[in-house]
Amino acid sequence: MLLLMLMFCCLLVSCGDEALVGADGRPDRAAQQLASAKTEAERFYALGDSAKQCFVHGKIADAQKRAEELITMLPRFQGNWNYGNAV
Image 1 (cartoon, one colour):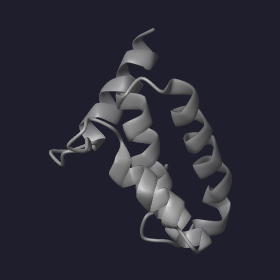
Image 2 (cartoon, one colour; image 1 turned 45 degrees about the vertical axis):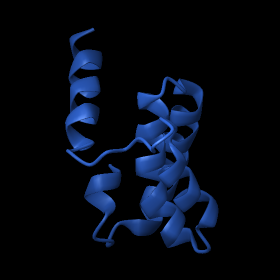
Image 3 (cartoon, helix red, strand yellow; image 1 turned 180 degrees about the horizontal axis):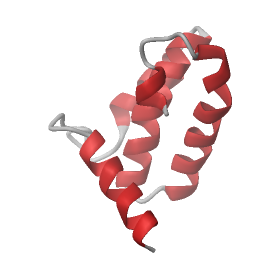
């Protein structure tokens, strides 16, 4: 239970001060970035924010799906500047 709470707190802290919610209260910005990703790298960059926003909005299954996809991409991006953020 303590580990779960710690992971949740880390997720919230990693969201930073940036407003992750669109004007209508929906995770539109991240969803648009993910949908418009044309390369695997663009998708790699967009998945983290999209997963966080889904989680914040209670869409846990969607958040988990995006996080799992991001985890499967990690081996291909070990030298990437965003690798640590993705982990």
